[in-house]
Length: 550
Image: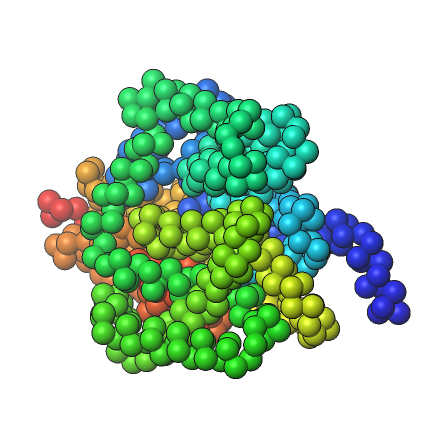
């Protein structure tokens, strides 16, 4: 019976993958908005009514009211995408996450389609993507990352097919998808040199095939002109300046960035570690893993990386160091796949995958303002196909065990995604609890902090603090979330009392908690993509205010 089921699934891969994506993401459709989700919701709601001026509105995201174009570091295509679902359905969590599910399905099906050209196990490669923690977590956000990856993967699909078949329309379509990827998230522009190098390796000369890349180049120039005309700044180059300036302020060395990027690569793509026993010789694997972990732990200690995270208590530093070293070793296993690409350097397809992996890792380590899961995400399809190719080159050892390892990896990814769900749920619950208890007191409820907490506080009628124009009355309340951004305690002469309200988080793992070194959304919070341990409750400080003149 199971053999017949397996045969049927193999004969209907796209239907199988669709069912798997729905099964994996369906439980999270009601996930509360969190982290940067509100920025994309507000952008989508604005472009629904002002499509020609996507960033023409103000937000309070950094503690003061500023134009949206100075806040966002992403182009606007995701806003138009979510606006489509918002106009056809509504702006609820379910509708927005349904849009994310469609984008995630496009990534998985696109990986399957690309893998058909690059390996013999396309269903395996597509399942690896779905079983990867960074993909499952990212697919449950309302941000631009998975949508960008969908455009990216299909750009590569049509590019590879177009070069193989000498079909100009496929190359032009690939260029169109590159433009969409780039205008969804600026990192999509990395496709231009990646596909150009692959074209040269494939064709051995520059020819008419290069015209396909004119589409994104023209789109980039038009976007620069368009945003400069509207906002007085060319936003693509403005984002590049932001990254360059941020690097000098965070206090991390290049070695720090490299080690943190290894940690994030290993944890975010933990699937490679689960599959490793069947893809490498046991003795070599143990040697590389143990050596990488020990060297990583030594460098972490000697460089004093953990001392740069003030929220880490001394009591958890040993546990964080162990996790850090483990994921560094796991990241080394992922990068070991580059050796396969190098050994097959006469194969343009292998070089494409290798450059895809190497370029994304280098950008995550040294090119972005912070290391985070979102910068690791674009490499997942390439890693999945490299893993499939390695499995095939070894004669597909232990097929049943490999499938079991893939299922365990999927379960692990689901646990991490569930932890991220609980984090978002706690943020919304904090907002609801505080409004229920203090929202009827007669005064204004002010709050600091942003992300999903801001979305639900504003939705309930509370007002964000504008540091440039904040004059509370005697009956006002100020809410300060403990684990959030851009918060500071009010001056003592403005406070009459302080209370604490907490919402427990039951998970033993978390994607964002400075006290556990978890910084999936930014390594500024911690050097781990997710941290294991006793997760502290999400807590709020509630200040009763008095007028500063009293």
